[in-house]
Length: 174
Image (tube, rainbow, N blue to C red; front, side, top):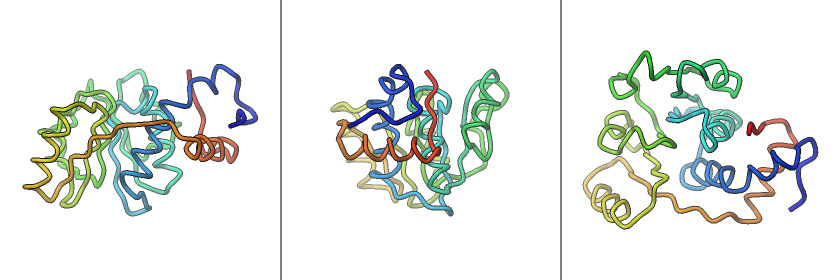
């Protein structure tokens, strides 16, 4: 697919894997909408900074978890609220979310499920046999979903990401 206009070649090269991961997690695994509350843990990393923007572009209410140094950047990305993990441990929050995307592996399922609304989805980006078996068993006994995401970059994802960049809904930081 052609490079989006306005992106350097370095920026365009950074998009396929992290962009497809963020896009598939938030538009294929769950259906975002304005009433959805989304928590992105690791919100200013590669996948996270695109996930915040994708959730924001879909009208969802986005909470970003990041470090003190990146609080302003998270707001610039479109986060409705930002949690500085140096100041507050998200695990202790009384807030509840419809979707949790843990991009930094610092909010395991056991802690994340406590932050989910009934019927909510926790998206795990670390596929493996243990994660797949664990999520299957956990999902059988809970009304909260532990979703293990395996990503394959597809042409349709690149087209959708290109469209988001061309509309100005998405920016990439390398």
